[in-house]
Image 1 (cartoon, rainbow, N blue to C red):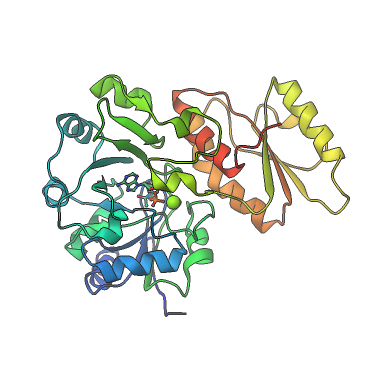
Image 2 (cartoon, rainbow, N blue to C red):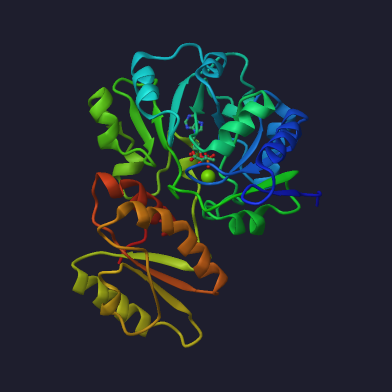
Length: 346
Ligand code: TXA
Ligand code: MG
């Protein structure tokens, strides 16, 4: 256990809190901070020893590389060999924002950050506190999501406190994160560029700027990838404690499948149903929870990880989620739901 300093950005003086947290990073400490996607757990990206502490606090496998966060474009130049033309166009369109670009790395980036890969993932977040922290630290910040490895990413300060108190030097407490799912990860070293992880920026938005992209097989094939380009893809992610399955078919078919599965559970099971505003009324058994309205994919995305953590807190043993119709706007949401369910469908 280490002593964790808490700074509440909504009530404590903002500048002073950021300045203190920036010093912690500059001295080789680790700090949880809000971003527009999910909370991150940051360290000085150029300090191997500091970065090692992130892996330890999260229990993250060392072969899963980190995203390096910057607060201006000049910092990007120090991290990469060159910024490819299409990366420049994406940066101009979507930075600062929920997009991560993978490029050939410069020799200055420690191996610990990239897990020895020849590439580095770079993101310029839009959240004011994230940008101010990077400025205050005076260095790019390497940061994964601030959850214990394997748990749903933190979108509320309560999630961060649950997972990280006693493991990190400081936590910047803030409002719920806006997007609620992690950034989109684009590999800019392939031609056409390849989406490795769908996220806050959609494939449609990206193609509108740079034309055709590839989708990594781990996005298009609904199976656990054996050998994935993005090393993080091979780990079970976003997993709630309860066994989760996704029901497919028409609304009535989904409801019938879920209802009959729940009937077959032992009496001590605590089943929950993750439905939508439009379909909640189709159920009579189990804890019935809405992810949000189908007309509002952004809010369903915003809610997902918090719902999964609520199920954990309530001791839910079985989660039955309705499949959400696939579209450009729901690709990231579906990807996280499939992963949370370990690609188990009924
Ligand atoms: O929204 C986000 O991206 C959040 C916030 C904190 O910025 N961060 C985040 O980091 O989600 P993390 O570590 O949970 O996910 C990073 C993903 C992993 O799947 C990792 O394997 C992949 O990016 N990644 C990082 N560097 C890579 C590289 N050089 N090549 C391929 N994949 C890489
Ligand atoms: Mg993560």
